[in-house]
Image (cartoon, rainbow, N blue to C red; front, side, top):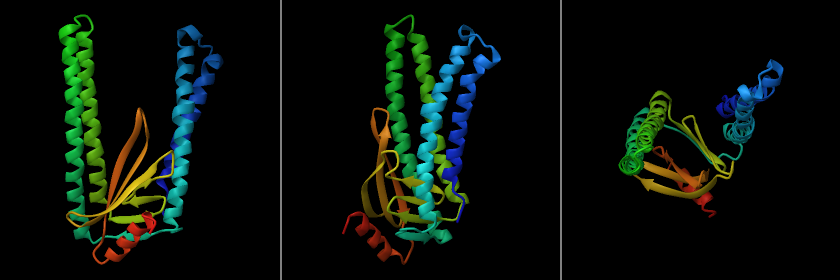
Length: 239
C-alpha cells in the first residue's frame, strides 16, 4: 500500500501537543517566575495542547483511516489513471477555474478591509493609522494565502502523474485527500459536468469559524470511463 501522508500529518500535530506539554511544565522546572513570562508560556502551551495538537491529531488520524480504506481498495467505487495529454488539459483548465474565483474573493475581501481602514483613518485620529496599517497587512496576508492555495495544487498536478480514487467516504485526487464524514464534513452535491472534458464535481462543506465553509473537487473522467462515471453519480444519489 502507498504511504499515507495523513498519518504523517497526524503525528506532526501530536508532536505539537507534546511541545505544549513541555512548555506547560517548563516554568516550574526551570524556575521561571509566573509574572516574568511563566504564565504566558503556560497560556500558550494550553493552546498548543488542546485546540492545535490534540484536535489536529484526532482529525488527521481519522482522515488517515479513510485514506487507508481508499488505498487498500475497500469499498472503492472507481480508480482512474489519466493519459498525460488529458491530465495536462485538465490541469491548465483547473488552475484557471481556481484562480478565477479565488482572485475574485480576494478583491471583495480586500475592498471591504480597505474601506474600513480608510474610515478609521478619516474618523478615528488616534487609532486610525494603526487600524489602516493593520488592514493593509491583512490584505497582504490574504493575498499571499490565496496565491499559495492556487500555486501549490497547480504545482502538484504538473509534477505528479494524474490519478483519482473515488470512495463513498472521499476522493483522493493526485495526492490530495477530500474526505467527508470526518470532523463534521458532509457531502452536499455530486454533479456530472462537461467543460474541457467530462467532470464529476463533488461539493462538500465542513464546520468553520462563524458557520460552515464549502469546497468543490473536480474529478476528470478519463476517455472510455463514462459508464463508470455514471455509476459513481448514481451511487451518491442513492439510485
